[in-house]
Image (tube, rainbow, N blue to C red; front, side, top):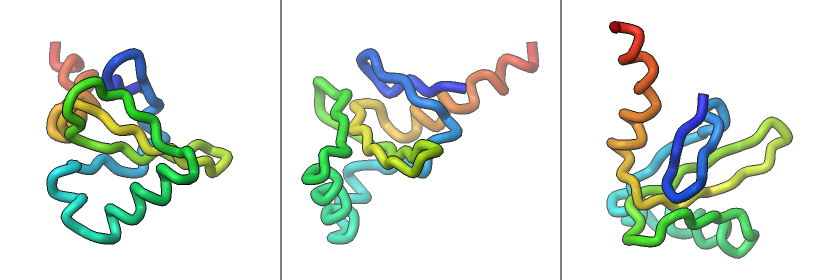
Length: 90
């Protein structure tokens, strides 16, 4: 399964480590430091042309970590992950 993060970006759902709200998670210094370090290492992909609302941490099978910045809220992303499950009731 894949998850659409915005613009032309889709990711494999089995690679998702976590989805985080930017407003609440960046209150923590640890989260801010993590995002700053990921940016310095070139692991951040911004798929948002508007105000970013969330970031999604993904890890591929080879261990490579990528952080996606999205304009879509974590609530909406979470709902999208269960979209196909809802279709099974038809």
